[in-house]
Image (cartoon, rainbow, N blue to C red; front, top):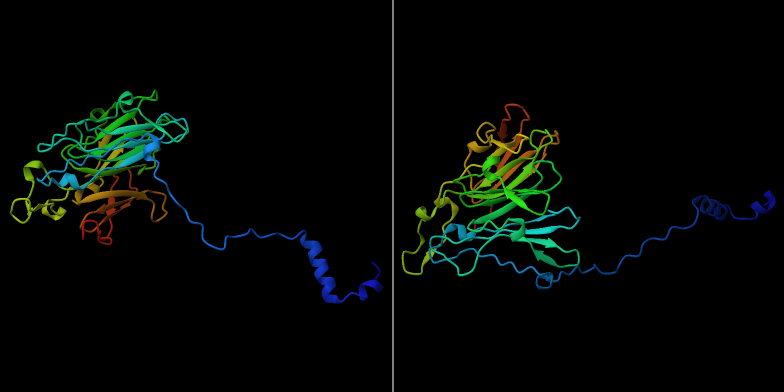
Length: 315
């Protein structure tokens, strides 16, 4: 185009054409729906083949363990790329003997929307165990995730053998949490040695022999007690020794020096110093935030000032 012809084009139009040529073809914006998309969920439990039913062993005696539980966890136990499902159940008690078997359950994901109950062949039923929760983690770094199952009076560590079966290695590992009411747990590497350690939140010192009467003293008027009717139990911290065993460092780390009514546990690095910290959610009392001082080998932790009071159990 000659300079003479260019002069005949208005400057504004000329600049628009030049800029359009430099910018290339126009970019079309992605159309957005005029109204928000409505997400819907459908209950597919029946068609999936999951028939598990949780039993909390409820009776008029109002055992406190009837009020809490149970947990579940997704675990690809056979490493086929599909998440399988582990479900925790209650158990018979001194005042409750159901006609049906009570056990935990492991369902294998078939990859077509259905699941198969493989509890018996895998050996993770834990019959007679009053369960509360479960934490999934590969504590021995063999590529197969293991199960730590929380419960009243004890907990169980199931080692994944990698062949579709599990073995109860609780005694050898030293993580039985005997005499305590374990409610939840978390696997985390608190000392950055490449091995998963274990933090356990414990609840209160209830027992069938110490079943406090709460509510009106009249037939049929007994109620469930609040946790403050009992003494809280301190959290536990187990250090992974790397040989299949753990060392209880609850006292040495100071994590286990403060009793609480623990119901939940979360690990995270809240101050971005590269070391995982620990948060315990307590029922009806202040929560615990433990700062990881990373002073290995002493492994001492600092309990931060009280956090916001938990509202769990406050109704």
